[in-house]
Amino acid sequence: MREGTMDALLLVEDIHKRYGKEEVLKGVSFQLQKGETKVIIGPSGTGKSTLLRCINRLTEPDRGRVWLEGVEVTSRKVDINRIRAQIGFVFQDFNLFTHLAALDNVRLGPMRVLGMRRDQATKLAREELARVGLAGKEDAFPAQLSGGQQQRVSIARALAMNPKLILFDEPTSALDPELIGEVLEVMIQLAKDGMTMIVVTHEMGFARSVADEIIFMEKGVIVEQGPPAQLFSAPRHPRTAEFLSKITELYGETEG
Amino acid sequence: MSGFYFEWSFLPKLAQGLLLTVEITGACIAFGFVLGVLLALGRVYGGRLISIPCGIYIHFFRGTPLLTQLFIVYFGLPNWGIQLSAFLSGVLALGLNTAAYQAEYFRGAIQAVKRGQMMAARSLGMSRIQAIRSVILPQAFRIVIPSWSNELILMLKYSSIVYSIALLDLMGMGKRIAARNFNYFEVFVVVALFYLVLVLALSQSLRWLERRVRVPGLGAPGLR
Ligand SMILES: Nc1ncnc2c1ncn2[C@@H]1O[C@H](COP(=O)(O)OP(=O)(O)OP(=O)(O)O)[C@@H](O)[C@H]1O
Ligand SMILES: [Mg+2]
Image (cartoon, rainbow over all chains, first blue to last red; front, top):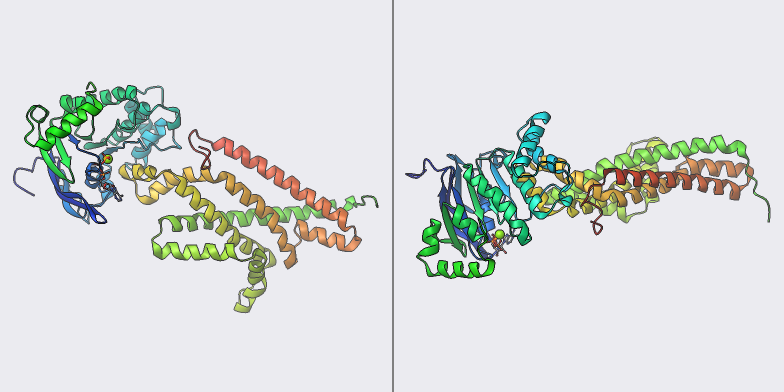
């Protein structure tokens, strides 16, 4: 491992990924400290989702390495299921288990993967649902919940695994505008509580107020990264400025 | 036009035949269910090495007549030193056949489960097998109930071909009775009614089952 990275919770080094002829990720590196919130922004098709999926190897990177607390995730020898259990993943379209009520969605992981006893897992699942403001919705099936509620269940599902970090892939992009706030609120609270997070999002209000650092990606590389204040007021790269003004026009500044 | 002469004293015999029909159907469906699920999983999740043989199996049993398959098992296998009773031959042939059809229904249902479900399960740290067991199959089984019900009812009716290997199922028993008293019309109409009652009872129970396990947001493809 490199100098000065020993204390990083997550270390991503030179990740490459190619789909057919197209190189989607062309060597992406960054690191993440414990308790840090990083926001990744960038145009569509830039490889943001691919990058997130490479971190827990839902997509297998072609080259490059990932470490989680000094354990090499990308090693062939590692038990990837044990690694994934420590990394939460929140999907754009929720992906709640359709056949399970909210409570079962949240306690399935702890029971099946962590081997937690049923009564313990139930108690935990109730707590996590309450934490995302869904006490009372334990018995609702995903199809009976609004998009915002579904996304909050999926956050509770990730939390119940007691993960070291959570990856969010555009968690509010599939939501009606009036439902975005309730999900962002939960995420803001998580950040305050010290959760380590990487969030791909177009919500600039959230990025501005919560992110410790923003990464601007384009065409498979990191163009620029830095604290929000710097990126928003004095971007070093012209593409960053262009993108930021376009995105603010498009999405406005949803309050974070 | 003559009257309807059914000798009611034959009813117990027919009931006996009906019992055999139920046994054969039940056994071949259960056998076909297990094999069908395995074949479907092989088709969907097996690499080429597993998927292709499963496909060949399915095409063979769907592409050849059931009666031919039955005769291969009952009359043909003894030439290879495999001598099965008529009952076992019937169950085996019907079971191998329905497995192929069930496999196709299960495959369709598995593929109808949304793609993100597997990814979400894996992201929690479940192995592929765990994900299939806890997430994919419970949904696929619900999705498959309507087409699977059809298959079950078809097999109940198709099981009547075992009369041709001298089994006294409902059909075989009817044929035997009719051959003695020549009341072909009456006997086979009663036999048909027996089948009808079975079919109705089955489809009702399956509909009940479907309602019982129904979950909002999960149904047959196109109905969700
Ligand atoms: N499984 C795949 N097979 C083939 N190509 C893929 C696959 N996944 C992604 N791609 C391609 O890789 C490129 C990057 O996709 P990715 O989803 O990572 O971008 P993104 O930055 O998340 O975009 P968006 O903002 O639209 O979500 C796209 O051109 C996409 O078509
Ligand atoms: Mg994306």
